[in-house]
Length: 197
Image (cartoon, rainbow, N blue to C red; front, top):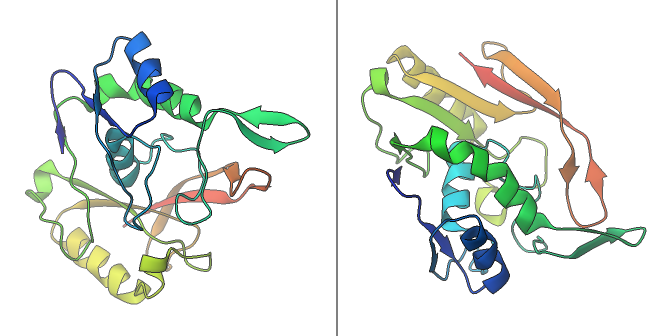
């Protein structure tokens, strides 16, 4: 997906979500989206692509699969509520101007077609080793992925991986304790790390 000119945001049937963007002057087109698990999401298509390719805080740091959550007025305990949709909107809006003319490609690391190394930065948000996995990632081959990273690095690609741990030849260049809302009431604070070769 390449973002150029006017940013078009595609929405599921959530009228409130759509209206929030219209109030801010963004065009909103209806579009029914489903995640890879066959469940309808309340996350717009643009957010999904950016989260997959960029993960710059557009998500609410939660799991969006069976048992996931999203919404405007979600009870989180102690009588408090969170507005996950508005949080996503606030997080992504400042990033839109910086993403003009960026060519996002997402998919399996084994299948994605990459432009030349001098024009490409690879960012991988793999299933974190030792954590609860998505149904589609239960058989993720970490050693095969590490070897692929090494190969791409040797071909001149800049490659970055979000993980909690990596083999010793990968260098941690950034880390930060994050708040990870695993559901409406449970929050964890793991240390997110960014690795490179």
